[in-house]
Amino acid sequence: MQYRIEVTIGLKDGMLDPAAATIKKALEHLGYPTDSLQMQKKFIIDLNEASSDEAYGKVDEMCKRLLANPVIHNYNIVIEESV
Amino acid sequence: MQYRIEVTIGLKDGMLDPAAATIKKALEHLGYPTDSLQMQKKFIIDLNEASSDEAYGKVDEMCKRLLANPVIHNYNIVIEESV
Image 1 (cartoon, helix red, strand yellow):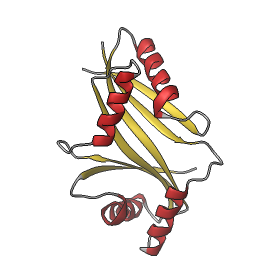
Image 2: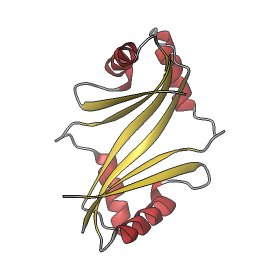
Image 3: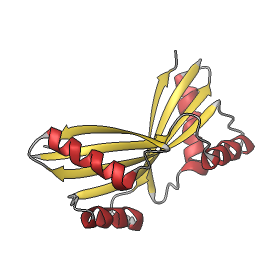
Image 4: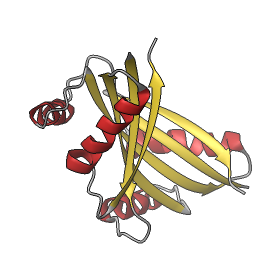
């Protein structure tokens, strides 16, 4: 079965994000003040697995081993069957 | 009114993404072959505006002027009212 998996990776609460802070400040300078601005990374992965559980397991391992740093990142995995 | 806006920015179809290609290859080396892997950037912005139309307009300008490069990026804006 073909699955499309969306992985969203962001910093855990309380972690500093200088890149996001810089963009927030740049937007202010351009005349667009915001109350808060967070940045996340998103991966869209197409995978062929026997079941959605297996796809989830694979992607969870990918996150732990390469895509995210579990010490500082939260990640969220959303799976849907591709047509 | 307080709004939370999610902006997702990705490369247009046909644009090369060497970073995504590298991660795809690294996953293969770790034993996780994928059929395709795309990377996107996501901004979560909290904004105080009179209406969701105004919030949309502001964020659309932010994308055009700073967050995205309209020549190479597609972007998608999702607005919801914060409680």
